[in-house]
Length: 108
Image 1 (cartoon, rainbow, N blue to C red):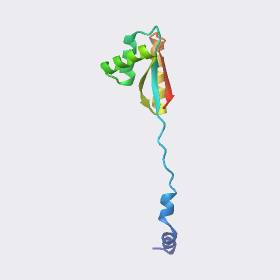
Image 2: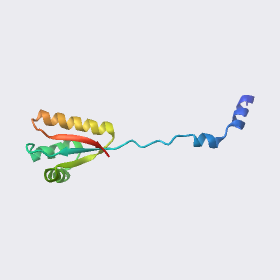
Image 3: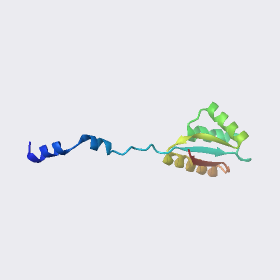
């Protein structure tokens, strides 16, 4: 072992190294919601929920009815990138099918 290596070992305080680590913050989650409107068919909303949010028929029906009765419904919680992608996909799909269905994301 060289002299420089032994000096490094003797002069290094491992407590200082451990305590200087920064804590990693968990990324924020974003909720994706669908908004009610008077024109989009309920069947289309169920289709969107099964296609883009991996909901089964029963879950999709419950969410769709909640949207219809309360004005909006939660589709899920995602990282920023995933939430943004889902909103973009739903909006593009709705436009392609001539429906005014609105989808948005909100920081949780």
